[in-house]
Each structure stands twice: as C-alpha cells, then as structure tokens.
Image 1 (cartoon, rainbow, N blue to C red):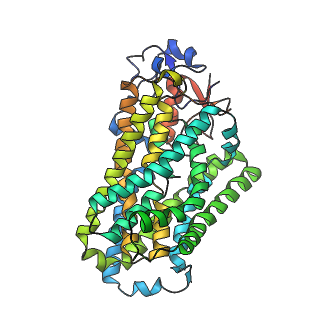
Image 2 (image 1 turned 120 degrees about the vertical axis):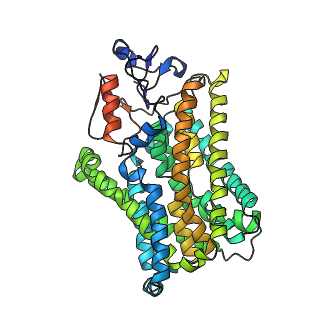
Image 3 (image 1 turned 180 degrees about the vertical axis):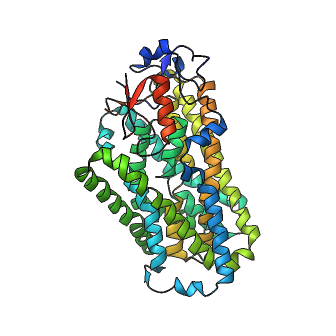
Length: 445
C-alpha cells in the first residue's frame, strides 16, 4: 500500500458529510495508490476557523505567547534594570549560562521528534532522491538569496537588523514545518526525511554560509562575525540538542517502546520547547528593554522582510511544484503532497537556531538578536494563513499524481509525533472508517 497523507477515494465527496469526507459507499476504494486528480481529500475543504481548531492549544497560542513574552521582558527590563547583572554571570562561548540553558531546552524537543529511523528510506526510490535534490536547492541555494534580497529591500539603511534577518534566512526549519505540513496534508514521510537532512546540513553549512552572505554578499566587513565563533555556536546550540534528541528518542524506544514514547512521553515533553523559547525571549527583551523603546521603528520594519520572504518562497515553490506535477515526463510522480512539503520547508525557518547563534555571536543586547526574535512572532500567523491557501489550491488545481512510498506498509498520517490534535485523528477515523493507534498510525479497514 502506498504511503499517503490523507485517505482518498474515487468519486465525489458525500454532500451530507462535509469537510470533504468520504461517502460510505466509497470507503472500500480507499485502498491503494490513486492519482491525485481523481481523489477527494479529507481536509482540503476545511474553513480557516476549522484549521485553527486543528492546532493544539499551545500551537494556537504560540504567536500571542511570544508577543506576551516580549512585552513582559520589556517591562522587567524597564522596572528591574538590575536584572541584567543576574544574567551576566557565568558564561559559555560568550553567552550567559541561563541563556545557554534556555536555548538548548527550546531546541531539544524538536530534535527528539525527528523520525531518524526513516533515514534508510532515502536509498529506496529515485523519486525521493529527486525530491531531496529539489529541497536542498530551494533551502540552501535559493532561500538564503531570497531572504538576503528581502532584507536589503526592506532594511537598506539598517545593517545590524538586516544581518539578523539574514541569519534567520540561513536557518532551515526543523520543527514548526511538521505542523504546517500536517495541517496542509503534505507527505509526512518526505517531510521527516527533509527535516533530518536539513538538521545535518545546518551543522555543516550554517557557519560558512553566514560568512558568505554577510561578509561577501552584503559586504558587512565591520560586522564582528568570525567563522570559528559561529561554528562553535552552531555546535553548542544545534549539536548538543541534536545529540540529546537522538539519545532521548532511541533510549526511550528501547526502554518504554514506541507506543508509550508517542502516547505518554511526547505530550508532556514537547511543551518544554515553548517554555525554553518564551524564557529566552523574556531574557533577551529584558536586556534590550530601553534599546527597544528607543528604536520601535526599526523593530517594526524588521517584520516586512520576513513577511516578504514567507510569501515569496511559498508562492514560487508551490507554483513550481504544480508545474512539475503536470509535466508529461513526471506525470504520476509529483502531486499536491510533495508540493505542500516543499513549499512549507522552503517558507519556514529555524528561528530557534538563528536566535541562539545571534545571541552567542553578537550578544543578547545586539540588534541582530532582536531582529531574530521577531521571527516566531511573524512566522506563525503567516504560515497558518498559507496553510489554508495551500489546501484551497490543492482542491482547485489539477495535479498529476504523487504520494511517495518510503516503504511504510501503512498510511501514516502527518500528525505522527504529536503534530495534530486528537480531534483531527478522530475526524479522519470516523470519516474514512480507519483505525488509528496511539502513535498516530492509520490502518485502512
């Protein structure tokens, strides 16, 4: 059976069921791999409000909580100015230990949820290798140039803020992209493989690319950015949580089993990422409180290149994948599922890593660190809106095929690893007569 991200059946949706659900007489057709153009998908007709309800409580509140953390940090910095001394004691790689702990904690859960065990599937199909080549080209060649261009267009006179925005563009997303892909109905296995590849490439490429785009392309010779400092920061703030994530995942797999890992551990462990992010933002904004209040204009201008980047990358990638899907020489190999994965990985960024590196390299009081912290405030509402756009276009446009098979005999839903609510799982099971176990795996029955 082919791996799929939404259960499909031939023929029109049942008019009484709504949400693109399957008519009872069509349920038997849900077996096997069907061309995208002949299928009806469960979630493509969801409203914007239904899409928001599909998010977990913490995911829904991410943007307002980030904004609240920023405000709280400024208030603390203004009315408790001595708090800065408390954060400037012991240091690791030039960064205060309290900040180091917060930044490692915010990266750890995301890297624990990466499905490393799917990595061997890379060698199984040519189609997967093609998708990986496309992903690497978009994420590590096109994306950084687009973010640099957006930063120069919106912030030509603000070099330090521009540098922070470019640092965000160099960090490829490895966490939130799983949620956007879940909601849009993208291929979860392809998304997992791309996340693994991006995690590895970030350790290798982030430091040299930071120097190239800031020192060479932007000619910012007066910016104190050295390869050694950046590489050490990446090793600390990506290498340590990556090692912790690998150890946590596989130790618990062998001790408590995959079912309990997904069902009992992840729901309680995942919120640590949000706690670490909010703590880090509070500390940064507390240390920059007076600087922020005297530079509100530049802070708000930093939002512009981020919105430009998210919109341009998503639109260009989605359009390109749709064109590729309808080429006769690739008919049946590329469909909406692949387009959704590529579009959201292209448009998303690893703001946790960019914040950590900017703090370590430029300092928590720097404009670069401040610009990087704006990332999650902008990304969440923009990418959530683009998720609805993707689903709308998914049902309106003609697609040539898709649904990569990575050797998984079951149809794995995109909310594996806790990426969606139980309500989402229940709706799918009821609509398509499926059985969903606690790990999120769907069996068609």
